[in-house]
Image 1 (tube, helix red, strand yellow):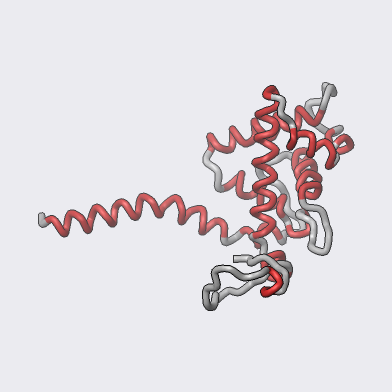
Image 2 (cartoon, helix red, strand yellow; image 1 turned 135 degrees about the vertical axis):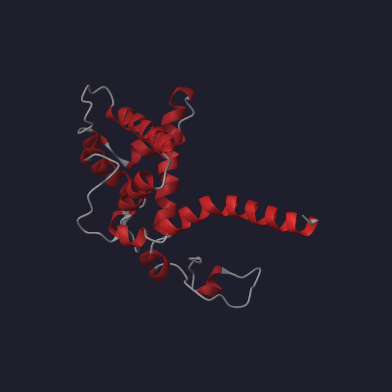
Length: 192
């Protein structure tokens, strides 16, 4: 075999190996708006109580202002769908363990393992305490909350509703301008 043919096949194999996991994520990511818009969405990964808590948490992270709240654009549905369908089995187990650890912390001294009293105790102040804690014993709880917060913001910004109606949206970009003022683009950040 000639050297060029070997290089060609190596490049193809390497590219396929790198692209396969990315394509799975991208292809499933294209369906997030369909999942977000389901009005009667039934959780597949979280149980009903956990899903209710998740809804309240994402709305505390991104409440309704001049833009819709996280639940109004279906962020909780996207998180449930992505964790349940895209994450590998070991990642699902780690995510569930971390999320339940966060719920256990929010549950406080209650012995109730169903976490039903978390909803009544959940507040922005409590989430801010978790976010700001320096306590090494709460590192796992803080990491779990930060991961949930990152997912909430990322999925919120990637929804069609927010991207088209609350951010600058230009599906076919024009000329690149390196340094411009936010006021020059209508005071909105870019969606893409």
